Image (tube, rainbow, N blue to C red; front, side, top):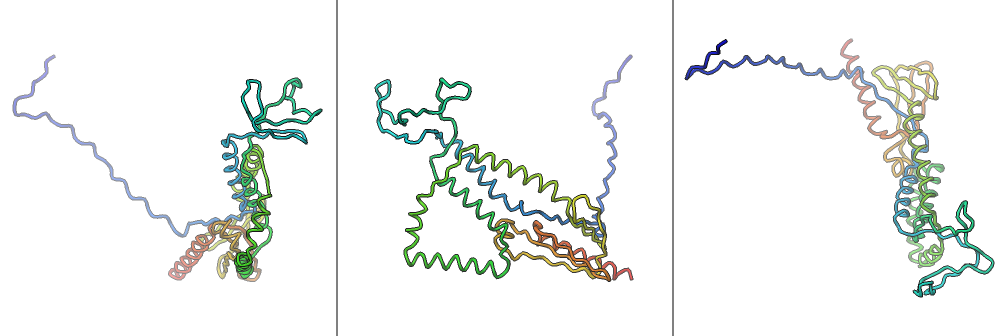
Length: 299
């Protein structure tokens, strides 16, 4: 079997290039088939600062390098006590007839401090302050003028206390406030709240919703309930975002949505705590305007 050698000046034949079929551009989405889902959240959504700052306090406490010692009443701290190796050390002296806690399962051996506890008392004070503020904000609605009144009252009292030099006395009394939580306390509170927050946000809250489509509104008001459809003709939409503390500070731009249907049997639906309500309402209004234009053009 022989092979022909290429002659000088002759170039070997190149294989034909594969024919590539050009891909057709994707058609733009049909705006008349678009859906806008609005989900109502419970007030647990506003509790994210509690578990957020709780995790921060847990990390600070874990890496602070301090432990909590459980001692009986009457224990005194001694500076430069002489240890067995004749070196001066600080020590805690237990009163007579009192004993330190023993290890679990071994009463003949004392338990060494092992609970992580920060030496900074302000961590617990800050955590409790955030917890109380969230409880007050989520349970006492301050809408509209009430938000302005509260802000003006806080600013006015701050100025009055400063002029009367009352803040120094308040800070002195607050300096005696000592709240301490160990690392396990911060972690358990934050982890349980975070787990409940995720379950409610991603599972339960998504069962109560509204779905807006061009010409139709589908509503589910209870978990496990069936959807009810309504015509969007003459429907009115109202957003309420007047609570400065709950909607803007904790809710990051959330609000309440009120929808009223038209016709012989009018219905009013109240969807509280809707995230990004401003953008949602703008999209719904744009969809309704688009439907009116399309409906008017087809007549």
